Length: 170
Image 1 (cartoon, rainbow, N blue to C red):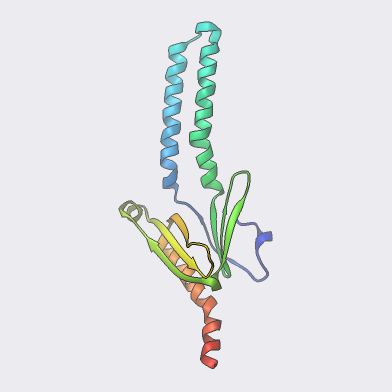
Image 2 (image 1 turned 135 degrees about the horizontal axis):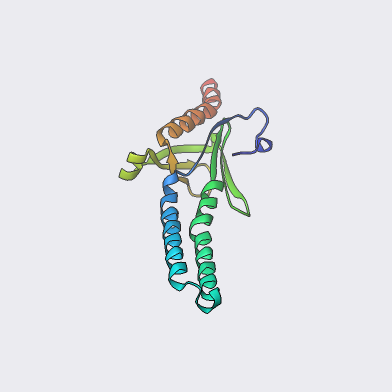
């Protein structure tokens, strides 16, 4: 997911993930409904008017399919979270890529939330607060949330360990 050229020297990838696939249920159902409507429409209209009404209707349904199914899938596919031994990287965007990088040494708090459905599916929202002016980073619907939470907490504690040793020596 994260290109090797974006890694710093001596930086290793600890975990990579994207949003849980549950976010694709609604786009899947939308796509299924559009295909059913398209099949019914093509059969009901037939070749009336030289086939032009059927082609126009199917073109409209194709645009709706792309907007309601394909774009949400591509958005899910390109939105990734990468945890390295030095930073947390969020990347997103289909055509224009954007992202946020939080050095682990600047993270103050790591928490997670899980609703009833999240508990059943094993996902949840990870909430990261750092020492910046920006609001906390909410990573929604992270699969295997407890494992990801443990990993980031361990890495944050390790990144703060040199500071703790310096404070003890003072």
